[in-house]
Length: 214
Image (cartoon, rainbow, N blue to C red):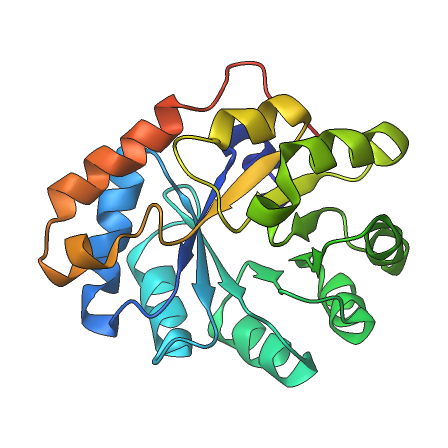
């Protein structure tokens, strides 16, 4: 199963930003048990490459899918792929990075915030886009842009919470990216991994049964 197909089924990407390397495995296990199994390790995190290697060694592809985020340039993309990243996500649109990912046969979901950028990313080879910052743009933007560009799957990221998650899915988002609203710093700092598991399960249960598909 392709990563995009799996994301279409599971609906959530957990964004692991600044998670200490020695807590990554406990954090991911809590997410996995809570039902969140697609993980984005951001490259601006200390020890990001080590975390990717560690998780790829610890878990099978069936258990979790490990990718790299905050890919800002080609150098970062190559480093992430060498470490074992199974997909790439960026906050920006870099056609050189998209071309590299396509050549490597790896999913790349670039960050965009306009219809023109969406089309540019799609034409460059991206098969989904990260709409960022989605919280500012809002569900209405997603609904409106889906009218002419419904063939481009949207991963709404930035400002997604338990309170507005359903609205983004109802508007047509294929999936959501969850950072601080899911990976709460206090839970990880205090080793409250059971609470993190419960929070992950709450997000999973909040996904509408009939939500956006690619």
